[in-house]
Amino acid sequence: MSISISEQAARRIEEIRTEQGFSADTALRVSVVSGGCSGLTYNLDFEKSPGDASDQVFEDQGIRMVVDMRSFLYLAGTMLDYSDGLTGLGFHFNNPNAARSCSCGESFSL
Image 1 (cartoon, rainbow, N blue to C red):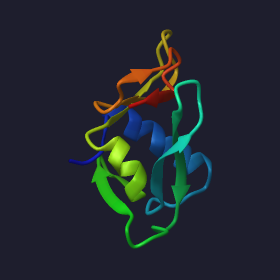
Image 2: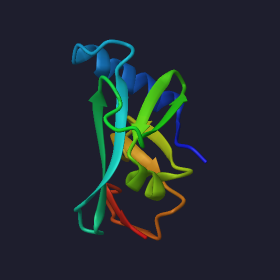
Image 3: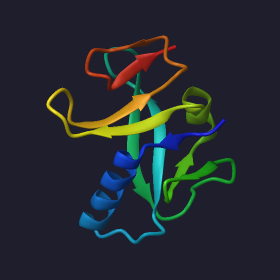
């Protein structure tokens, strides 16, 4: 299993990466950290090179993603999507492992 990205999310990631002056080979770091109203929250950041030999590296829609092994256990099979509609602007994680999510969709629990 891997992490996948929708076309809309890939386009927005490319836009943000360009706006922030990162090169096309800069990876997207996807991680899970403690926090949020449900206990765990998602984190996205740009990273020029994988930080650890145990990092999992995936590529989808032309976006290279780096995920630490602990976060990957929570994220396996997740689809990263992006919406710019009236019902929710921003990135959304469609995570099949989440047993419960908060109403804002930024945190989850297992």
